Length: 154
Image (cartoon, rainbow, N blue to C red; front, top):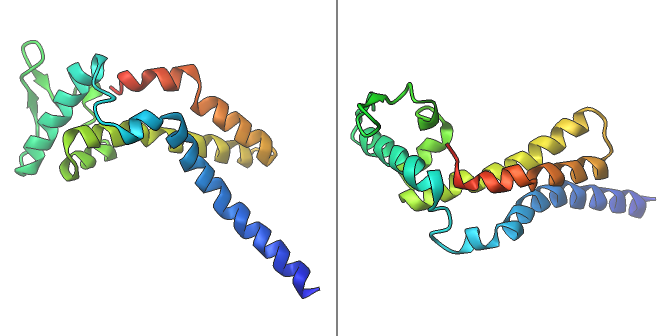
């Protein structure tokens, strides 16, 4: 009897570690090039809007100055008022800690494990079986929209 309970505990432990590992390894496998090479997300609106806004934010906040006005868009506008600036988004803090390119890559790539886990957790909350929740989470996370939007994080 003790061996049987130990086997059940071992299986639960493997399952408890297996799902988070899978949720991290699937995006790494799917975006292999993005994880292991530089200069992947440097096209489209990422290059024209996201990089400059995050660089501006990081430069101002690094010297303890709040970025109130963004003069580099048209005649200028309130930086906080620009919806796409993400002035208060938690991933903006990465731009204070990491080089700009690495921070942008981390911001974009962090969406996929979060989408995978969030979808799985939501479906499990509605009593969808584990396999079905995982299948739906993978389908949503690697859908055409989420994969193609990497060039436009704004």
